[in-house]
Each structure stands twice: as structure tokens, then as C-alpha cells.
Length: 115
Length: 112
Image (tube, rainbow over all chains, first blue to last red; front, top):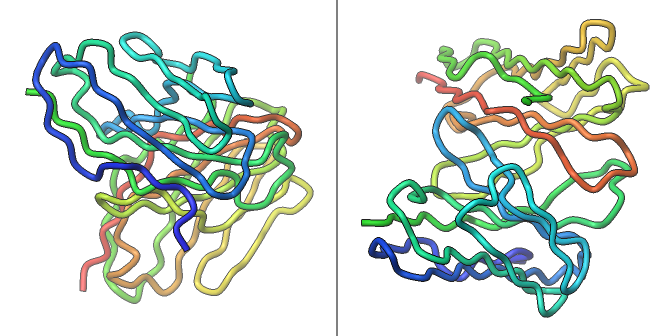
């Protein structure tokens, strides 16, 4: 019954590496989101996408890029990983133009450590 | 510019007692609110929601209250159980929009 799948639960990468975080949803949702969660800062939006090949910057896009070549897949890319990108990364999806319901469906998260 | 605020980063409650988690918002356009629960190493899961046309919504042990004039909502958990220990996020939505606005979360610890 898994609906939003993030490819890795835990990742350890070195400073300067290019890092790809993958997210796949099977609910045919138009909207997909990438957040990071840090203690005391809550959920901060990095990027979101309303449709294939479309992307919008969130609150903290610096140091990140995204790719959405297919509706079900939304990738987050850390161009050159830095230690301040150590965090829990959460992918979410939703129908467009929310009118209520459950809001977003989240993946289980990827705990990224940059050393 | 935090449009949804949870001013208590943590809360500890004895098992069996009531847990009250608070949330304030600044955007008067929000007309739907949600609470999510998050365990460590898992993604947030939807818990309960409320529309602005209501002032209360109840689901089992969980009740959310909305005070629109004060721009304040609260989540009540009665009775609290150790399995309720998690981080709780509230979120606001203007219906018809694509984005939820999340608070910073409150970590609830229920002590057995």
C-alpha cells in the first residue's frame, strides 16, 4: 500500500559530491514537493512541481535543483553537497488545487548525512 | 515569514491525561487546517483536519478546535497514550491553492 516511495532511507555522502534523491508516487498526482526537516525549523519547502517539466522554487532552493521528466517521478539534486545540507528530506504529492481532504501524502523520508 | 506558528517546540504529558497542542496563523485567507503526525525516520501522516466553517472536529481521541477570530487552533488528545509520542505539525490552506503552509512542529512526549 506504499504510495510515495523515496529510494533511500539513509544516505551518507562526501562534501562536494553530486547527490540524487529520488521520489516516485503511484497515485497519479499532479503536484509533487520536496521538503527538508530540521529540528526547530519544521518543514521547509525546497522545490515543488505542478506538472511534468514544471518546477517552482520554494523557500530554500539554494544549492538544490529538481527534475520532473515523468509525472510519477520527482528528483531532488544537490549539485555539490555541503555539510549544512545534512537533514531529513521528505517528498510529498497531492492533487492540484486542494479543497480539503488529507492534503499531502508524504514519503518515508531520506536521512542524508554529508561528511 | 512564518504564516503558521507553533510556539511550543515540546510538550510532555502523563499517560491518560490530556495533551493540548497549539497553533496560530497569520493568513486570514486560510480556510482549511490540517494536523500531521510524524514519527522519527518516517514521513508525516495525516491526522485530522477542520474547515473554517466549523469550530470543532472530532475523531476518536483527537479533537481539533478552531477560533477564527483569534486565528488559533488547538489539537486535543484524550486520553494520551505513549504511542502518541511524535512530532505534530499543523498546516494551513487556502482552498483552491496548491500549497500547504506548515508550522515548525511540537514534539509530544507521553510518559507512561
